Length: 196
Image 1 (cartoon, rainbow, N blue to C red):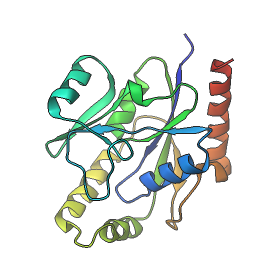
Image 2: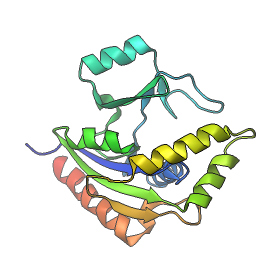
Image 3: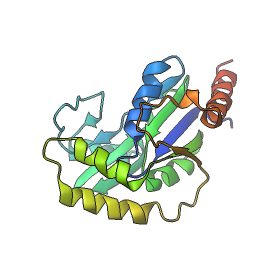
Image 4: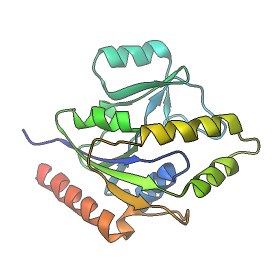
């Protein structure tokens, strides 16, 4: 069986620039990339839009989706649930999404999906400054908690990935860099072959 979906999974510690890179890449190449929008049971934050940033659903709906095996991956974080549904994928494009390491492991085990992983990295100082600058009154305790959780979660990744150094914090288009463009070209060819 040929894999039906191509997924470009972006991982990285908080503040590395995953969401920015996902958005810039998808906006620059809407004919190639499809932005994966995850589901969550948490309420929207300021400036978040349902269907653009997340699909905001209630716990019974999320539970139903998990029990019906409609979710590629699902996790609980601080009392809220997050997950990626099969319906959020497009078989005619490269699906680009932001995941944690456990989510990548779950998707790697899902039949019918080719996954390429890019680890977005940035120095600690840059990541912490980005986090602090996201809001007027940042939750510093949460920032510290996320920092130490990330240190643990990213210590021993057990899957292959390409590392992308997001040092300057500029809005990056992944197609502009030879080592990521090569992966994207390979995935584009697989999408084209599946749609012949």
